[in-house]
Image (cartoon, one colour):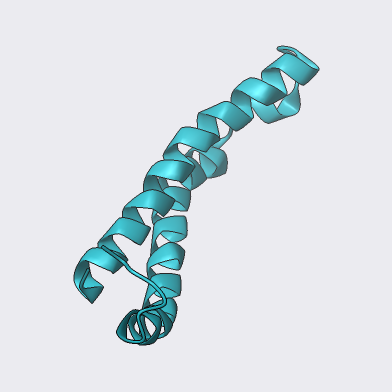
Length: 84
């Protein structure tokens, strides 16, 4: 697996994971607190964060992949790890 694919996979896992878990967090809050919870009445900032947060998390996962890739490449050369 090359670096470009490795970074894309990590970015997409962060992005999609956040997109999936955000509604789950709202559903959990609804089940715990009911309809009168202040967390269930999102303002403009909350709505903006629901859009921006997956991108931020995706970029963080991609940067982590960039930092980890040299170690994975070294382990792969030594035959201790396989990315494929």
